[in-house]
Structure formats: C-alpha cells, structure tokens
Length: 189
Image 1: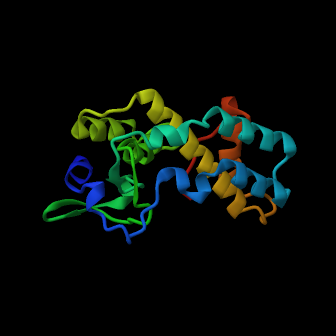
Image 2 (image 1 turned 180 degrees about the vertical axis):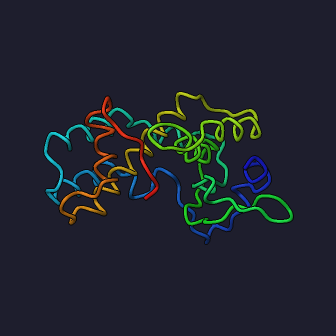
C-alpha cells in the first residue's frame, strides 16, 4: 500500500478518468441511507434513532478521510482482496478505487481486524508496521472504522429489508448498535 500511495501520484491520473472520493460514495451518505431504511419500514423507529445518533456522532468522518495529502487508494484492503503471486502479494477487486487520505486504505483492514468483525487483530498491526509512518491520528482512523461498520450495517439492513424474519447477519449488525453489551461477532455472510 505504501508503494501505491507514494509512486502513483494523484496528478498523474488523466482528468477524464473518473475516480471517486470517499466523501462522495453514496452508501456513505448516512442521512439518505438511513432515510431509505426508514422508508422500507422494516426497522423500528427507536432502532433508526440509534443509527442516526451513530451517524451524527461520526459526522466528521469525511474530513478525516479527505485530509491532505491525497493519494490513490484501493479502498477495500483485507485478506480476501489479496492473492499471492510469484512476485509477491497482488491486490484484486479495485471497484472502490478512490482518491483521499492514506487513512482510507487502513480502514477496511482495521475494521476487519477488530470487533465486531472476527478477523485477526494481528493482521492490522502487521499491516500498519509494514506501512510505516502516517500523517493522521489513530482517533481519526477509529472514527472512520466505526462509520464503515455503520455503512455495513445499513447496507445489510437495506439489502435484506424484504426478508421476514430479518436475516441473522442483519440482526447481529443492528444489535451491535442497539445493544452493544449483548452484541455477537459479525460474519462476512
């Protein structure tokens, strides 16, 4: 990741090539996404309020993800998107390619490596150690990780809103916000 962030400069990307910025991704527009979820009428009003409160608490996430200097980001770094070749690791699944702070490429693996996900905590520590010095704070990283978890929850709830009863994974994710003391680990399913 450090090599990507330091060798491919943002100003080298042709202007006609559209690349998103983290703050412009529609599924991270929490006001619209939670409203959409509310319109589906599959989440109780008090549960929606918990999700809205979480979105308000993390409202500064986009500023964290867009701090300068800007780099080209993969956008979804985790073990499932890395394969090994004879030349070393290769990143696959570039559909979340974006331009923003290098923090953006730390968020997915940090989220995967910590609760409520079930990934190895050592994975992110090794990644961060290999990456080296960063220009942002761990507080900023943790704020954006929480918002990634919120996006994962809201998307899962929207995606399964027609299911009766609610999909087990959607229920686990919602419970993480509503009753954190009884929350179960999430799965990738």
